[in-house]
Length: 257
Image 1 (tube, one colour):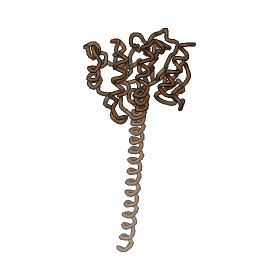
Image 2 (image 1 turned 120 degrees about the vertical axis):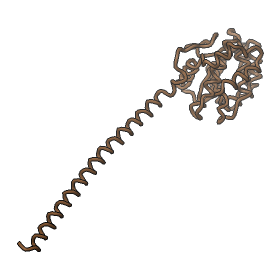
Image 3 (image 1 turned 60 degrees about the horizontal axis):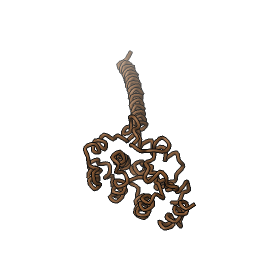
Image 4 (image 1 turned 135 degrees about the vertical axis):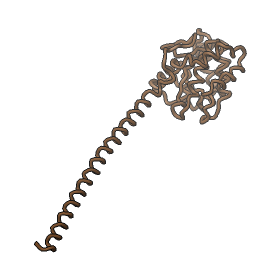
C-alpha cells in the first residue's frame, strides 16, 4: 500500500472519529437540555402552586378565628349594629365602608337629620359594615376601622365614633385607617372611649372575623355598592329626588300612620 493510500485511510478514520465525537457531544447537550428543561418546569409549577396557595388563603389570613359579634349587635347572624329606639316605626338600614368617599358624602349630608330622627324615637338605624375599598384599592383600612367601630360599640360609643371616623376619613387611596394607632388617636375625640379595653380590642382585632362575615353578607346581598341605604326595605339612596327633608317627611308619615 502506498504512503498516499495509508494517509487517505487515516484521514478518513480521523474524520469518522471526529463525527462520532460530535454526535456524542450533541447527544450530551440534548440530554442536558431535556433535564434542565424538566427542572425549570418543575420549579415553575412549584412557583405557580405557591402563588395559588398564597392567594387562596389571603382573604382569611387576618380574619381567621372565632366570630365575635360586638355587644348589642342584632339582625341575621348578629351582623347589624343598632342605633335608636327599638320601638321606632321606621328602620333605616345602612351598608357602609369607612374608607368609602360616597359613604362620607352621605353621612355629611344626612348626619344631622338621622340624629334628629333617632333621638326623637321616630327612627332606628341598623348599620352594616363592609370592606369594599380594601378589596378594590388594597390595604386593610376598611377592616381595621370596622373592627375599631365594633370595639366602640362594645364600649357603648358606636354612634359618636362612627361619626368621628367619617369626619376624619383619609383620601380613598390613603390607607391611613390601617394604622391601629391612628384609630386609637381618633378615639380620643370621643369622651370615655380611649381605654385600655378599647385599645386591646383594636390591637387584637377582636371583631375581625365578624367584620369579614358582614362583608360576605354584603357581597351576597346583590347590592351595587356602598353606601346602600334602605328605608323600611326600600332603597332610597337610588332615589334621585331624595333629600334630608324628604327622608324626614317619609319617617314622620310612617310614624303618624
